[in-house]
Image 1 (cartoon, helix red, strand yellow):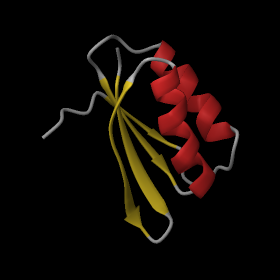
Image 2 (cartoon, rainbow, N blue to C red):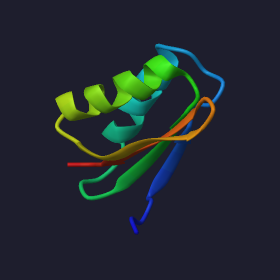
Image 3 (cartoon, rainbow, N blue to C red):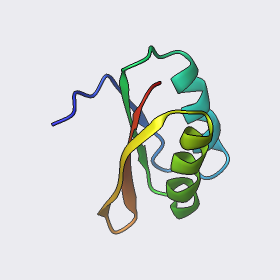
Image 4 (cartoon, rainbow, N blue to C red):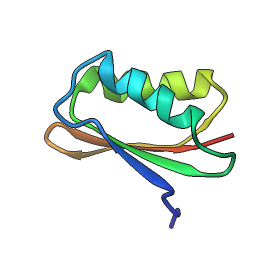
Length: 77
């Protein structure tokens, strides 16, 4: 079980907003913290993990939690 430090709910928002908001959020977090990002837009579910890895963070998981809902866990590096 992973301890979630913060949750960013981007449900109902389309690109680029979830991507931009998640980038801003991780900049404010400390190394070792875990961010849970909730999205319901398929492109965001693909792009956010790619973006986080390119920024050097660890994608713990990215899983579909509903018909059009995803939960992405990011460990801040």
